[in-house]
Image (cartoon, rainbow, N blue to C red; front, top):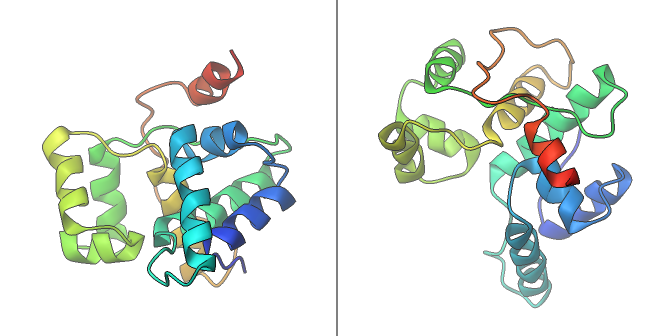
Length: 165
């Protein structure tokens, strides 16, 4: 099973997946190219001895979700529709993540970040991929994933087509 413990691990994983540019990585993970550049800087900090410069858990989970989706799809860039908060509430209930604390620790982010999703009525675009990865992890790498699909708030290929322009 994929293990992403450092940003160096992440970038090596991206190479193996054919994600060889900052642009492709940003499209695949629904993040900005600046985030990718920041992660490269954090990898340098880690190599220089800063043991706190490690990726959040959601990034490793997203890698697992990406791999699972790719096994079912020949496209280089699996797509995950945006998740509504209603979908995420159902998903959280199915996985017994009943509190913001449990949810935030599952994804390696702050409780405040999860609270902000609800306050702003918007989830991050990487969330469905990380949720898929979480399901793969708790099943010990098995592919089959149960539960509802995210409710699309935008077309599934919107991010890929915008990045291609």
